[in-house]
Length: 86
Image 1 (tube, rainbow, N blue to C red):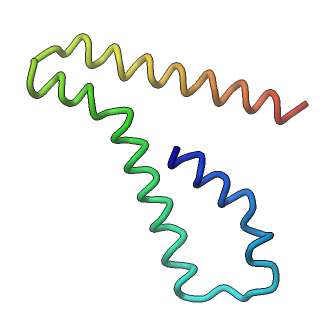
Image 2 (image 1 turned 135 degrees about the vertical axis):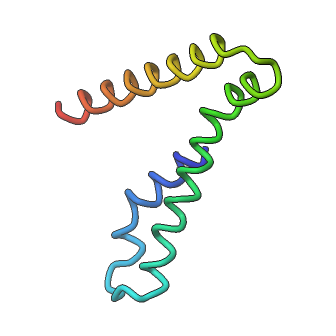
């Protein structure tokens, strides 16, 4: 949800700030929002595998979950890229 909102903001940014000049607040706020989004997305992908490793010592399951998450994210990125090229 957070990543979707971030992409929505970045896509429509030119409509929001049509004639405004960049300020110091803008240069600080944009990377800060991006970092928060990256941390939340990383926590969503790595949170449960980290729990499995630290509390239940299930390394195989944790590595499998991370690998499957990366494969699915790669497939989704490839599909979106192919659709954008057409």
